[in-house]
Structure formats: C-alpha cells, structure tokens
Amino acid sequence: MKTISLLIALTSLASAGTMKVDMEKSWLKIDCKATGHSWTAQVKKFSATVAGDDSTLAPKSASLSWNFSDIDSDEADRDKKMLDWIDSGKFPKGSWKMTGQGKDAKGQLYVKGPLTIHGVSKEITMPVTAVKNGKIVSLDGEAWIDTTDYTLPVIKMLVMTVNPKVKVRFHLEGSSN
Image (cartoon, rainbow, N blue to C red; front, side):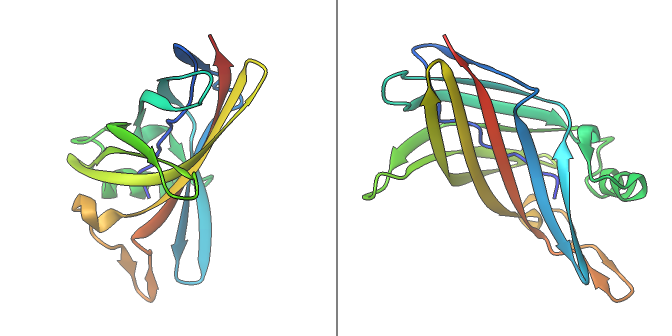
C-alpha cells in the first residue's frame, strides 16, 4: 500500500525544460483491498520533478519522493498501523526515479525506474499518458505493485487479510516552460 509511487511514476512529460507541477491539481493515490472491504489512500504531500521534450511529450527525466507519514487513508487508526507496518521510523521516505522510457507497437508510452520502499528498490514499468493543452501538461498513469516484493509482510487479522497487491495511480498537472 505504501508505494505510491507512485508512483508513481510521474514521468513522461514534457517541456523543453522542466514541468512546474501544480500540487493543487496533482495527486497520488493507492487503491487497497482487504477481506470484505477496500479503500483508497492519498499522498497528501510529495515532491515531483519532470523534464522532457515539449513537442513530442517524450520524457527525459522524472523523480518523485514522499514521506510515508503523508499518506492518508481517511482512517487515523489504519494510518498509524500502516506506519508501523512499513517501519516508518527506520524507513520514513519512499521514492521513484525514471531511468528509461519507450513506446510499444501501438504507440503506448511506458516509463521505468526503481521504486524504493522499506529500503528495497525494485524496477517497475508502467504505462503513462501525457496530454498538452496550450502550456498546461497533464500526465496520468498507474501500476500494480506487490508489497511483499519490498520485504513487507502480508497483514492478517482474525479472518481479514490485506491484499499485498495494490494499485498506485497518479495525475500530475502543471505548466511547461
């Protein structure tokens, strides 16, 4: 669940320089499931840098970082347990950094790079969509991750089990320079 990272993957965007990410319009979310229910947690505060080619929207570099204490599931007790589970005292931050990108035969853009959670880095690849409207650029993507790949245990309580596979989704919006 803690990964976001995304996700995040935040990447593939563009400008002939750096994208100024509008944090009021951008978000990172983690979709989680457990026996009998599901929830979405959101990273309330994160930092993002994105640079690329303004005309093709091809990414050149991107990175994302966050503090696990900034993840909010709208349930304080669950958030506290999540911070204990991820050992946030020892591993307070997560990050992702783009190391490559490409397109498949259908033209779908993909980005890849190591996602670091709980002191473990694992390369992930995810599809992203970049759209430009004037000087405003938006980037959307998602990736499934398995938290056990980051040496995190599966959470089991009585008859409930939290699925270790979570979906990280992101929307970045900002202006190109």
